[in-house]
Image (cartoon, rainbow over all chains, first blue to last red; front, side, top):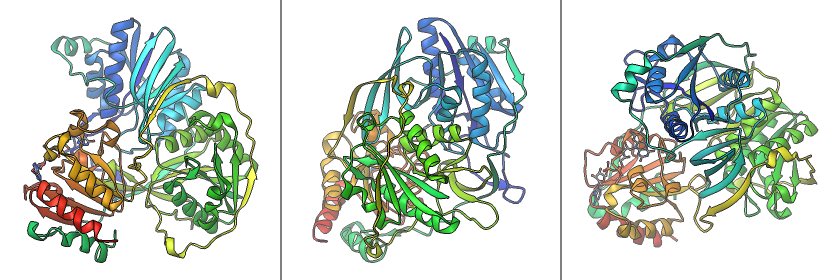
Length: 245
Length: 324
Ligand SMILES: Cc1cc2nc3c(=O)[nH]c(=O)nc-3n(C[C@H](O)[C@H](O)[C@H](O)COP(=O)(O)OP(=O)(O)OC[C@H]3O[C@@H](n4cnc5c(N)ncnc54)[C@H](O)[C@@H]3O)c2cc1C
């Protein structure tokens, strides 16, 4: 089994977001970066499948050197080696093109990633990569089992779930509860230092989209508190004042 | 030139979020010149498809092929690209959902098109084509210029104001569409589909009543369901509630769950952790009921009641019933 897990490097969920350079760049000062939470699920399931079935697990990140602590963490959790495509990606198409280029050079049975990144929330990289490689892609995947070269996938759909059987190779966007997140142990952390982390340069891709500016939402007005003893007046206010009923 | 809008069907009717996408697409067509063309795949009644006319579509392409009756993002993306080629569409619009993102991505890769998902407003078209979308799970917005010849947009619920009362009958041309299907898009076999048909879908709902750990247990959910029924709302929950199996996973709202953008979100016994807020900050109006006046959710709320959910919910239900 040859598994590729793609990870993003994103501000921690609780990070306060602000911008610099005339609102054209994220202000990274004081922001802690983490492996994308959905990617953590993909990584955890990838490690379990590798342990169960043998084979190799490579992690791939498209981004700058400051993500290396997160890549090392993925190695400590159980990846065998890592690839970093040295670029400052500006859109999903660019990221997908890099992943597809790397994946196209080796035949992976499974390409796992999170269903979306929590910075740009697009949720489209798995689909782009699947199409660029000419293989099926499914998301969001909540359960994944393998039997030989067939995967059984449970996917969340609007208001429910769907179970599919599909032949490998596949690209999958993962979410909970596909596996429990893994925390690196001391041995993992020590061995991660010696595992290969290959840095490669990006392939060139036409600019499909170009970011222009960022903006924070307008500050929220004060909350109108209604006394518990007059709770029913809320319904009237929602109808006449907020006009949402 | 045309704008092509893909509409999701639910039991043969166009989903509400997709009708919004049609209205959005019609406005884009107005701005860029050309007409709004709708694509529908799978079983649907003509009368349902004709609704797209009232929202501004000039034409509906309908592929009633039996192989397309089951949702299949691979084959659907293929059909979408073929429809775009037939209509000479330069802008392709889908509504934000698991299916919308998956189809949009595959179509964008086929067309070598720039794709932006999570769009929250109409594009700016004077000097380039710029769209704004929500990022950092609603904590910020980004404006992006799409440079490619063909542009793929995935729009969020409420990206456009629609005055339902002002909708005319809008006549629309219905046209059969026969995409060429590839066997390679059908290699997966569907083992089972579990869908709570009767429930209102969270992504479609205009009103959501949601419960957290403060509801104390699954056996205490009835008062919340009663209020939801009285308001015609969908029900949701926080993550610990679905982790504990008090409610099904597909009701879980937040950063790691579903992101919703209803007109009204009523949170009952939910503290308002940042990961939960991340899934609801697209809501127009937020109501919080919590016995702790310091609960962080009050900072994000428009209306709040400090008190016990079990005393307050029945009062709200009574008041809601007397609305009509
Ligand atoms: C990476 C990550 C991702 C996460 N993703 C999500 C997510 O997607 N969605 C999500 O919801 N959470 C998510 N969480 C969890 C989140 O941090 C909170 O733990 C969770 O939202 C808390 O749920 P709660 O408000 O129901 O429970 P609690 O925090 O326990 O709050 C219960 C609230 O109920 C109130 N209460 C109790 N009894 C009553 C009563 N009788 N009447 C009125 N009020 C009462 C209490 O005052 C309290 O405020 C995530 C966490 C992490 C780390």
